[in-house]
Length: 201
Image (cartoon, rainbow, N blue to C red; front, side, top):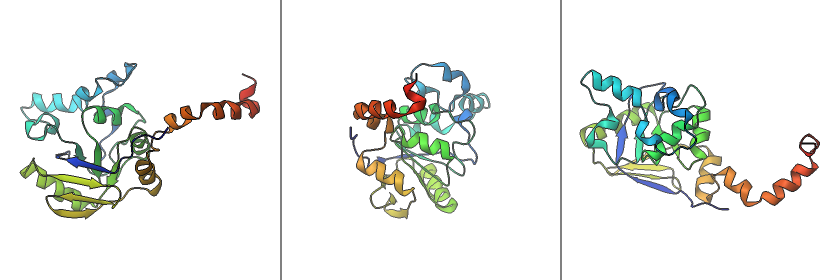
């Protein structure tokens, strides 16, 4: 089954500053007991948000200026820590459709590709410039184009990077490996019958 191709993501952006933001912060462990991913979006960064609220401060996710943002702007090594697939799910179900950052944890990146959430990279200076832009003008228009490898923000164009295999998966609609296997499940069963370590079970 070929899923819808993901070529472009447009909308406003949400700036989230800080290096080494781990998956425990993105979605706290107490929410991992859910048997589905439904509702996780409401709990993204919940502990960070509660901590800031207790200090009389506001987390970007609670800042009305950024509500409805589809592009998340992050810094270095985003999504590090434990390999929980709930982290990109929480972002996606909260409305985020692309993440632009300096770098990503490999596992977080892979989990994001699997749900159709592109993660592209920019230099530290460029990410900082975009975060500052959005903090000053929250309704700035962004357009990420995976075909051309560019991000346009308020008329200024940035060249973004994404591994070739992930880019091709998004553009071809083959980003969900599970759906591809289910679409050819008869072939999977036939192969399983020929594998000695599977056939005996």
